[in-house]
Image (cartoon, rainbow, N blue to C red; front, top):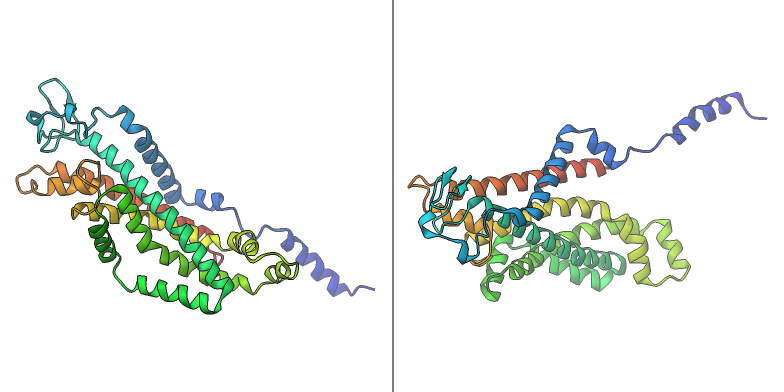
Length: 305
């Protein structure tokens, strides 16, 4: 016979068990106006970057389209051919609006490519270190400690000085300096999952190690890596702009916001502020939107909330 107190407790617990553990990530993001606005603004900006160069008033890196007589025109000025430069021109006669659209595309390509490769390499290294353990774990983590022991910008500068300038070279340098962060995060999370019952069950069933790591451990360890990767996209974009500003990143024959800022830096004292200011504002807005979205994603995936 069931005790009345136990029956009452059962009726009290049952509705709680049927309540969802937490709302979906999308609902949590929608509940925050700042996050919703940032996501919408970021999507619009990425859309402009993807289709913008096809509708840009000028190809700023085609020498046939440039006219030195249109150099350093103020925002809203009109050229001899009757073309209006809404954001002005630089010293080479490039339309700043077109140059920013092209530069934002390079920034996104570098940021997404570098983070994607670094996250893949670092996550697999951290996963192997956590699952295999022993000498392999010690070796991988000592390499990680060695890389993280140096300033990121210094390592990137040395690498680019050795391999030269170029978009692919910048991506390679950023992968080298960033993969160690993902390895440490993945290893920390995988060590927690390594001791759980589903991993022991897979081992007892005779599954190979690679299958357990890829199909069992990896899906349960991706949340912190995804959040960190989102924020690191902004870091990679800022690093590319810094390297290009210093003259060791993207070559002058390719669009880059860092190069545009550096190109106009020498004209700030003469009053031609727009050559540096507008690319700087575009870079700031892109990084700010990515950081806000990454921060809200971190809050949405935080189990303590």
